[in-house]
Image 1 (cartoon, one colour):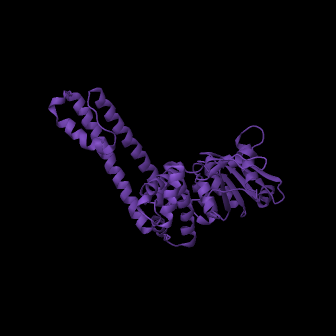
Image 2: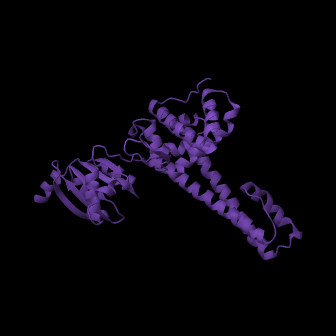
Image 3: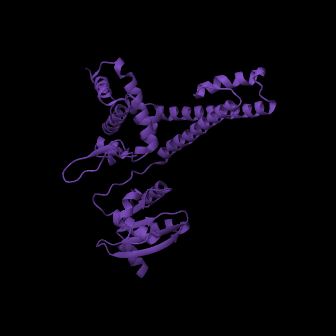
Length: 346
């Protein structure tokens, strides 16, 4: 009976997630500790289901989106917190119980920033991006290995995947290049692996194109200059609920595209971009910004005139980051207002 009353008194619950062991720390409406418990994975869902509706805080880590969906189905309000925002609340030495207490404390802060939860569909798109990114990295490593091995035999191939595709069949057919039969077989196998990676990447991109065509938000984002298939689908997969961000600057800051500050004594000091958030997504947006900067001089509208003038003052790299920042803000506006991008005339 006493344990039942303890459960009813829990208003805020912090859970330190793991693979098999979960530490819980609960407080009542007055902030007094009423629950400290360690549970195995198989018992966690049953225990949470017995609790009255409360606020649950968890760290944004592996499996956190899965547990968020489960806890919300059980009627609870779930907030995910970035680990760096939990660390200041850890008292003394780090352990599971201290982490759970710190999460419970952090989730109660009125100014705390939370990580938006992802749906299963969003995680599917993000998985496609992660698998494609790994395949591209493997293909690049394969091409570099082929180029490096051939250099030892006196055969030089220019940089670039396209150069490998054109040159290797010619090298294999050339009987006068003094390559041994054993190395020709090894080279053929390496080339076949690269061709297989090409086909796999193409299949993944076709799947992304199909998903993008069916998603209205992706189509809206594609209307922004500098945002293509990869950027649009990655944004939709990563953002989740756009209403989590109050304005476009918050989204840009979440992506690490705003300056770091080191201000004191009333004197503002701005440094380079913070580089927080998703590195992959930020990279896509900056690469899209480079494309806009490269072709800005060919157009005379208001946006491209601004880009051209900025490039003249600050250079290509800073201009590309500035365009990525602007595109992030525009993306927030389009997703919030459910509209498409309209270019301004000069």
